Image 1: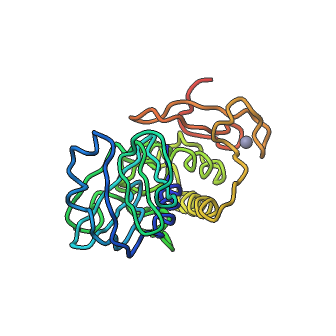
Image 2: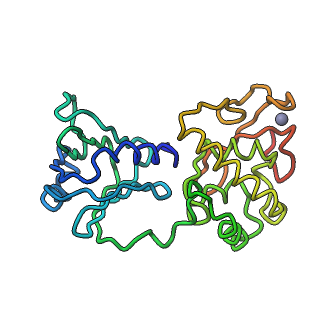
Image 3: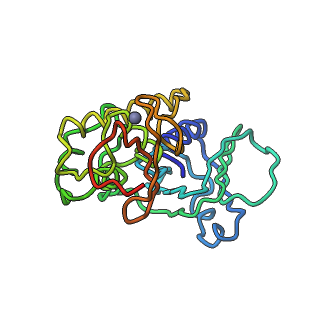
Amino acid sequence: MPEGDSLHRAAQRLQLLVGEAVEVETPHPRAAVKGLAGRLDGRRLERVEAVGKNLLLHFEGGLVLRSHLRMKGRWRVEARGAARVGKPWLVLRGAEHEAVLWNGPVLELARDRGRPAHLGPDILAQPPDLDSMLTRFRAQPQTREVGDAVLDQRVVAGIGNMWKAEALWDARVSPWRALGDVSDEELRALLKTAAKLMHGRLDGARPLRHAYRRVGRACHRCGAVIRSYPQGENARIAYWCPGCQKGGRQPKA
Ligand SMILES: [Zn+2]
């Protein structure tokens, strides 16, 4: 699953094409039917930004292409004319570089109306708007589990499953605790850690993982065995240390 930070990296790479009038192709038949090439070809790419889990490409004339990568989507930036096998969804070709979207299940063109209203504040904003995130956490049912709420893009945009696990571990908060049982200070610490870890990754750091996909291995902090269990409506897998992330209704081992 592309996390918020990988979208920000894609947005960084795509800056190479900003300012250029781009040639646009949609080799994949499922993209071709959207008629994007005809509407975008030759327009200047004015701005590219990652907002939550969306990549927004702003073209001259107020057109915005929204790309959501879901599980398998990838943006790559290559030299113009690079050889490739297969049919990408979209190719944006500039004088020297081309941006290529593979497996982009969500691709839609809209008039620029700014940021989608339903998204929460972006965790990677500098600084992140922690007050506004906190307000949104407190507007949720306070029986909701914190590990579920932190993935809700309407509460805070951009935190994916890996950063959820790592930030909860770092803040010593069990994903199974009810929001009403988690203090404002703990929520702030959790959000600050998520932002710090994600920015580190943007800068190229590869931090040691403490919880995510470490089931059955010893906790780096207390030595207890890391567990996993599906959580929330979408049954995303939560990872936590029952030794130092206590509390909440932890599933039976
Ligand atoms: Zn532990």
